[in-house]
Image 1 (tube, one colour):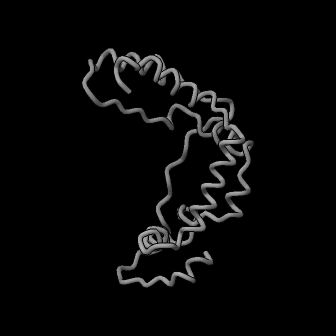
Image 2: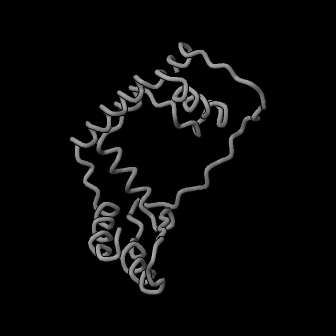
Length: 152
């Protein structure tokens, strides 16, 4: 945001971070977009490559994030989002960066006064480190069948 909009921008950011609406119509829109993304996942070689890359890098364990399904997408509720936000909202889970032309000390003071004042909610917890994949990455050439990938 521009310096002249800093206060208003930080106010909006604070509202988004501390008082998210999780509006049902926006969740429904995100689900429709997700279903469309899933249905087009195997339409071109670059999307297949990106989709399959997670298998090669992370295996079929919980670190693999590209394999969303219509069923998993439909299972997400507004209450799930609110609960996840309640757990994730913890100051140790936030990272704020500022770049551009500004005076550092006033910017740090402003960020400390706003984003830096966020406290963990009653269910907020520090996110644990992401575990390393537990399978060996074997170098090689991998061939993916488009039809087989569609079933994942």
